[in-house]
Image 1: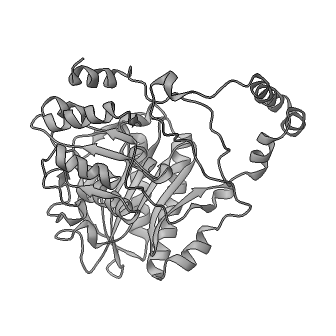
Image 2 (image 1 turned 60 degrees about the vertical axis):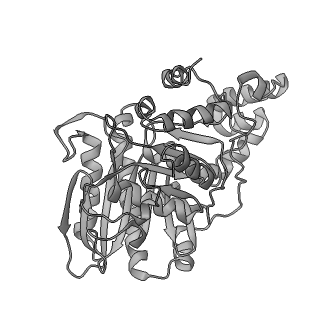
Image 3 (image 1 turned 30 degrees about the vertical axis):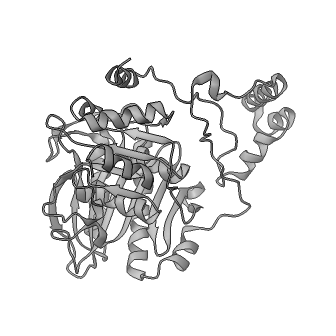
Length: 397
């Protein structure tokens, strides 16, 4: 079978890598009582949560008695690597305030982080209660705007225009630099709701924010000049990933809209077995990309790709490994925005020990000069060995 046929099978969804199965551990931290009840007997679960809980508990108990074996790698042709969480529940989680007090010395940045996370709480609620419908407009890039796009963008503009910390701001929906407060210190660049093409499926989407100091501004600066980047992921839970003084931290939105630190000093391994291949059309034109996809298949990498930049890259922080690739070709040009998407993610991934490539010269996306607000770029990002392989096989660098 040719590699292009195999790629077609992957796009059609017939290529199975790892079979789904129930998670091994309860989600950490937010509701300890729920985690404990999941480990208790069916009778105690029933008394705690009523009839519905009794049904669930009985199902859990029955599964235990049946001793159904977990999926085997041989049965599904999957990678030998298991990608279930290895997170262990703690008795206590640090709050956002506690972590910022210790890990972020700049008081102005600290104030702005709190404002940005407040906006993420509001976007979470907006996604929960609003239907996904088409707005009567497109953004400056010609993308169809959805009502939730507009709501998220308006919430971030409310933040920027009302903040004493922000001097200038720009949105991917309207890529112009807007002056907000001459006494402010920071320039914000955001994609308010990345994943418009999948949000109507109720899949995970996100918000991406890059922060530059007013001393560098945006135009003429590089991604390496950022003083902070923040990415919010709206899925079954809302989580945010933030670059602080000593690394990348994950915060999870909990009861009462309080943030807890669910991961600290996140690290991305050099090697990986998870890949997220975007712009697969380019594989029909670019032999190097075709060969790279064939390499992943031959070596039994696990495909984890949703079509949303935020979940497809953020899995690298939770799994500790992975690579996202989005090359270009003549008929499939670059789509990712340098200032709104690639640079903020580049800071997060490189600070966590990963690597990035601009998809053309092989240099880090953080070294690209921002010459226009709407500047586009190709991108490879994630575990260092696989970004290096991308440069070698796709770019011949």
